[in-house]
Length: 269
Image 1 (cartoon, helix red, strand yellow):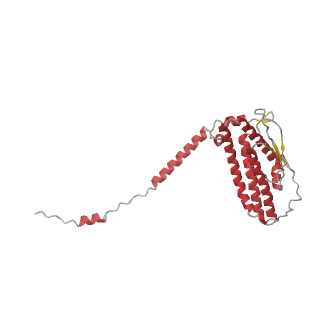
Image 2 (cartoon, helix red, strand yellow):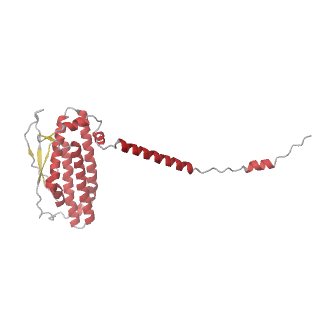
Image 3 (tube, rainbow, N blue to C red):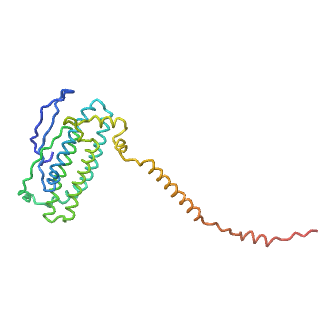
């Protein structure tokens, strides 16, 4: 865990009534290292922070209910890992660029000493939630390093802005996707209801296929119009191909002509 998260995590001594095991809820203190990262989490009354906590709660409850269902558990784990891998790929693209220049920064840098960003309390209690938190921690560090590189003239304002935008927008897209598919705000009596999601994905071979089923399908009238348009296009293509057939010229055989003119008449005796 990187140093922007307090190592003094609090652990709740709750117990799961189903299997009588400690829940192990960890409450970490996440300290923003740049104004960009702080504003991202503070935007709209800490919407991003509340979204993370809702995702964390949803992930825990889903895996708690499918603990004895290996097939369903594997589906969810594979899908979440895919989302994280895509996010990590986007983040690492800019991390590699920053790492090449970060050695140019002064060892003793006080450029951020005047800023005291408010710490956030962030909750997690599952390895797949920590994996997302770890990516968030990396983004936090990169936003600060990008700003430092700009301050010392190692990157332009345009590059700085693009890095910050891509890092934070990639995080937003990933979290929005997870929150939407898990329906993380689905609460009954204040608690996340995981059953609708679990029952839905049981009908599909993968979470990806379940997501595809959620895509809006064209109604019968629209589908018929699309088929008609496709038929017209195919017909025009066929007509065009027929009209553009190059005629093959008939070439008379010079050899045949020569042979015909040089035939020696047979004399009848």
